[in-house]
Length: 311
Image (cartoon, rainbow, N blue to C red):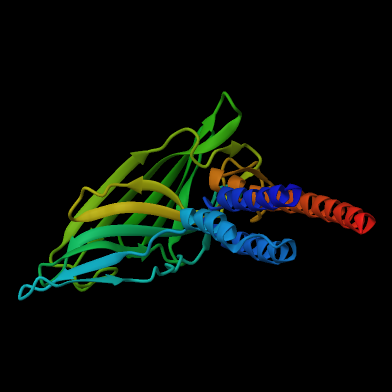
């Protein structure tokens, strides 16, 4: 009975660890490792396979997302065919670095990121195209301002496109943050980035941001390896629907320095902070598992000796 209880505890511990890791897409390998460890442990402890399947598979299924499905119905019959499309991993935009230099030669803003813009439009055959993307090219020309309370960096590309990010000082926290983002753009047939667009379209957006967007103490930089959305509007039929930054490293309000290198990171985005917890969770799970296995071993030895004495 004691051995069975320990077996159940082992199953529960591993299932709990796997479930706690399931919310992060970067923890699939950790989940597989825990499952493999459980398989080897359960074989030595003779854990019922039905119990193993019930707990571990249920935790795994809660973390896996279902693949997209396409349902096609034939007009000549009542047969419905459902096709499951395997999920694809999108290619992330290439990361580039830009800066803003003051007239005195000091670098006041450093920006390193992959920036992706998303659009909806009508193509030359009058079909709606949704979610079309273009990335800010690495040869985009940077300019900006190095003010005392606000600073900005503008990226010019595709001849007449301009993406601007403004940073503001926070006098309360002695920090800085991205206070707004704006984009002016021009879509033209037979021109980049969407040459098959039906007709010309000019647009612009200005989006104020919260005070905690890319926020860091002055004298430090901000890092976020995850995707960050600074603008999103899925209601438009033609025009910009999203601005996303990937694997970003940002620093504004730099002291009088000509150095092109970032200062020490003073803040990270929430997703990055959560990913740092994964090794801690895995380590705690492994430590708990080792304790339980050792306890089961000594209890098993105790029962074995008592059995020999009875004989």
